[in-house]
Length: 100
Image 1 (cartoon, rainbow, N blue to C red):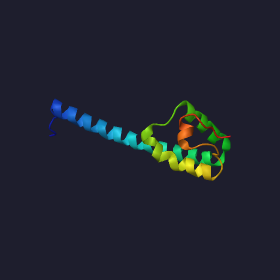
Image 2 (image 1 turned 30 degrees about the vertical axis):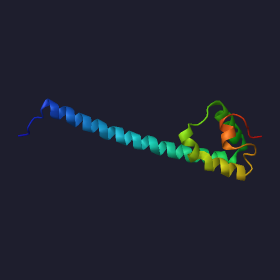
Image 3 (image 1 turned 90 degrees about the vertical axis):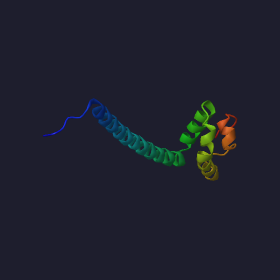
């Protein structure tokens, strides 16, 4: 005969199941962000209009200071490819420069 769970055991089991489901959802969210990030980077590297739109967006809503280092290399690459001609990443972030 199976033993019944106490109410506390049932609550603990439900919490554990919720935590597992939240971890699975976080993994799906992370994977989605990685896929869309890769697609966006590819599009950014191929289309000057996307660079211009990003420059405009960054002038309106700058990235967080703690994220600047992570995206600096992309802007350096775009400058090297002549997709981003004017100003530095910090100028663009501050809305002072805009790609032509």
